[in-house]
Image (cartoon, rainbow, N blue to C red):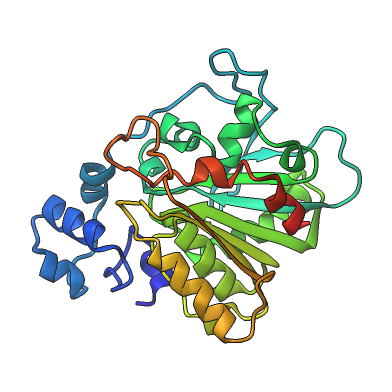
Length: 293
């Protein structure tokens, strides 16, 4: 199968997956890392649970955490043909809005939609909005949608979800010419694959993406990749190679951008995942949202 069919949940693992992930999945499913690397292991939900643990669920949106400012209102929507999701729309918005579609990582696969707002997802767009800490450039200018999956991100399913979001049933008024995909780790890879497969996104923002996509498939799509150079889960060379590949095919530095952090933090509650929470500085970057606009 191509990488769009497995996306860390279904089908054989691609060679592009981080070796540490291959070993962890192999151990969890009782297979050898050689089996995993050779594509002979289809990772099960049990394996992922052993690797990433159970995500921490929080109260339904709107959410206010600790002493932080009151959170923005996140609504729940469900498309029977694809996903349940949190949806945010700026209260003062006028006219069709650009979309920022956020795809979560493997750590949020367990549980239900509330897992998207778990402690380990601190810094991501839905959590920042729920806590009232999102940059104004995001909170005032974008519709933000954060679906939940237990089986990985599949381009065909994401395409159906986009159809739903663009329909009157979603309750959103979106600008079909300004659809943007982003995600963390598994979700960063999922965003890249979806952008390449559907050709419906104007830009994609992978953060610590756990896999690569052929640069040729992303030609004509703006990419800004973020990664921690100290990421012990997914090597930063994934993002470096991606952006270099795009530039070698003629993309300018403005269209194919790369931000590397010397010392990205670990996700809260995951201290051994040092460097993997490049989400925290990346999504707090006002220039990112200005670039997307």
